[in-house]
Amino acid sequence: KAYFSATSAHTCTGDGTAMVSRAGLPNQDMEFVQFHPTGIYGAGCLMTEGCRGEGGYLINSEGERFMERYAPVAKDLASRDVVSRSMTIEIREGRGCGPEKDHVYLQLHHLPPEQLAARLPGISETAMIFAGVDVTREPIPVLPTVHYNMGGIPTNYRGQCITIDENGEDKIVPGLYAAGEAGCSSVHGANRLGANSLLDLVIFGRACAKTIAEDSKPGEAIGPLSDNAGEASVANIDKLRYADGGVNTSEIRLKMQKTMQTHAAVFRTGPVMKEGIDKMNALWKDMANIKLSDRGMIWNSDLVETLELQNCMVNAQQIIEGAEARKESRGAHAREDFKDRMDEYDYSKPIQGQSQLPMEQHWRKHTLSFTDGDTGKTDLKYRAVIDNTLDEAECKWVPPAIRSY
Image 1: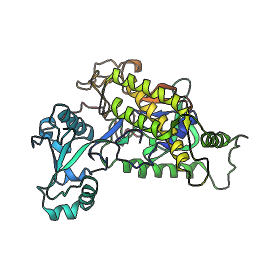
Image 2 (image 1 turned 180 degrees about the vertical axis):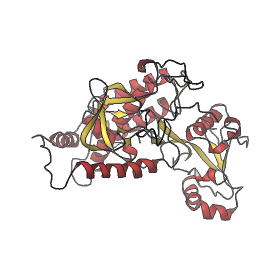
Image 3 (image 1 turned 90 degrees about the vertical axis):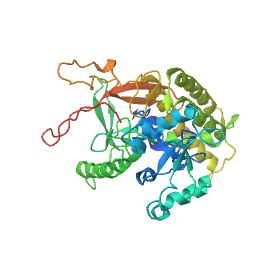
Image 4 (image 1 turned 90 degrees about the horizontal axis):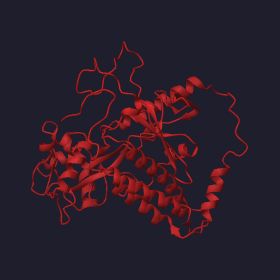
């Protein structure tokens, strides 16, 4: 919920990634934000990819199936980032639908009602509740909506969290594990494909369990805790409970969400993102001047929302700073001022005979963001991509290819 329009629940506030940041550890590749093409216009609720899988398609104000122009082979089933950008271009060029011409339509009413009832039962209900649309008779208004972050807490294939040492080499953080959307084992690179969040959770959740079972034994002594462990968290709660500044939590949250929606959107440019960073920096000053009205400890939603806002602010800062620094387009990160992907080789040609660019001169590398949870000051470092598989005999390295549809 760092963005104004998102498919996720209001509780999705990046708490895990923010906790890791406060511990002085990095998050990885936060600038790669996936926009799902079909969020219901105005509500942000998700219309699943299954709609298009079952034969639904997108149309513009002229009734044209415009995806045939952008991805002649895959059409409406192209990657999410490709479909989202295509929709944004249609809207920009004046072919959007509705009185404001600010969305497109997802058409399902050419499909038999029995098929909709059997294969997409929840969709019909969601469209009726959130868009007031009967999918058997009329199209659903949709808009690209923030859905997923390819970044997260960097981990290895065993689920162990990692950081880098002073030489830039990977270093395991003992006792810390991450899986699911919070983790970033980087199986998605810069663009997650549909259903692959199951991989995040099931495969790496299992990997964490296996690693813990291998490395730790029941009854083993636990490492010593520092004398002041947990005190900072309690002090933060008390500081917020009695905060009596001049700006409400909801005001800062809305400004943060609008800033991210405008300045770190589907298409990105350097000057627009720089302006967004300036706006975010100003919001950190507001955070120091925050006001809470509820001083209690029972069902204090004002306090909970402020704690969540602290987390959201860390995530938002890392997203926009990482995006502004990455001077290329890769996967879901599409820059209009740097339209090409910048790898260490030109992968449109055979690698043989090419000399590899040093890491400082290309962008096929991971961003690591270190953020101060009080001031928002963010430092970026970079980490090499692991190219070699665990077993060359079982699975050879697959070199990157040029994306085309």
